[in-house]
Image 1 (cartoon, rainbow, N blue to C red):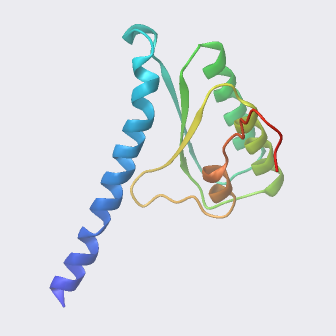
Image 2: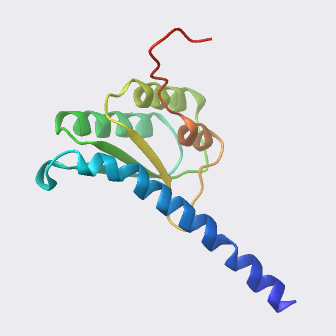
Image 3: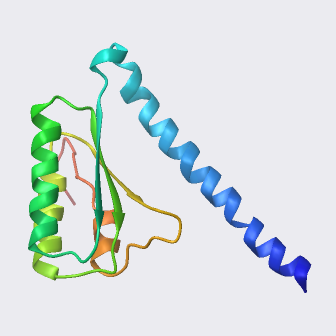
Length: 132
């Protein structure tokens, strides 16, 4: 029995490693486009319920990232969920942003439940042609 429990806890490492490597691969081209001094990534941390304060916080973080010329905004998120209207405002801001937004659920044991799921899945649709 202890071997089975150990095996389950060890099975998290491949997924965590894959997530970290994927994030690194996604950010490498961004970081290598310009000199090191102008490569800036803004990190915004939000822990709590998704509500109007959360929507305003993300809006301000995106505005700061855009005005500072950041290459990306990482939203470090830990939420049990929250209000539908606030979540929709946050998704609108994220998808309309010219700065890429990366949502990262942290710390270990953190969650993105309910409205947080939709925030982590939100991504802009930038296509050249008409949508089908």
